[in-house]
Amino acid sequence: MSEVISRGYRAVEILYHAYLTGLILTTVSRRSRADGAELLFRTFRRQHLEKFLPGLVKLGLSKLPHAVACAQYHYLSNQMGGVKTEYAYESDRKAWVRYPPPRWIWYGSAICGIPSRVNAAMLHGWHGHNGVTLGNPRLGFVCTGQTVDGHPGLEGYYLEHDRDLAEDERVRFAPGEVMPDADPARDPRLDPAAWPTERLELVVSRYAMAYVRTALPVLLELLGPADTRRVLGHAARLIGMQYHDETMRLLGIADSGPAAFARYLAALAAAQGEEVAVSSEPGRARVRQKGWRLARGLEPLDAAAFEGWAELWHGALAAHDRWLRLSVTREAGTIDFVITSR
Image (cartoon, rainbow, N blue to C red; front, top):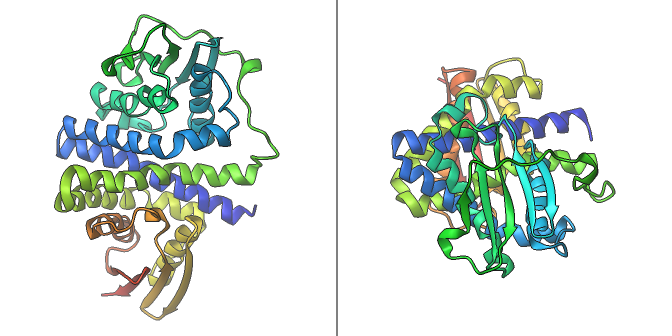
């Protein structure tokens, strides 16, 4: 894989990773903790229903005891996405997973703005539903620590109980228990033939994109079109501005003006798997993007989702050159970005 492609994947991961975190923080701070928790719960539940069972097969875990398979799934799938993880086996009916600091989803100082209730919504959305999806009503998740509460990591274990669990028992909190030290010799490992470095670099960029993709229909269901446009767009604009400089450096673009910003948009679009064409003339540049990969399989979506997402690029342009204008339109599946001087 060329250095240019690798840097493009990294820029996409940074941008969408920050967008996911910013979207949740925006919902918590400008709506409510309850809406933030519900957004996270629904996003993780939807992602779980779409990806968990196929992921077990893809990672070669589907024939393991359920508690072990779940812990190994979270260890491997999150590690592939760039998340720091640890795993510990106790028995076929009990296996641990731990996410040490720094927490991926609440990276940097963002962790200070996340209430415990919001963080716990992830566990209820995904971890607590694994047993249901596997058809094993005895399987639950016991959370023994949350980083947002000051514990040294988000950690817990999957446990197959001796009886069926009620819905409110599928996730239990037991902060007095501590995960044993991980044994690297027993850590799950990917097959390097099936997962070469080039494939893993692509996975890292798609991991963050997938959560933002899942959040689009969830926001529309939760907030409706008007508030989705406001929340999604506000977070997008701020993230676009904040991460413009870092992603520009990664992409090796140092100059300013319409043509430079068009190259920036095209490089990010290509790294997201899009087909793009760029044209420019003095004082004007255009990027044509064939399709919108992020929303593939979700259509039809209310236009509010696209309009909110498009604020990423308005924000980036505001940091790039506040005197330039950007028009973003979508027709017949093609997205047109037109950058002009005022």
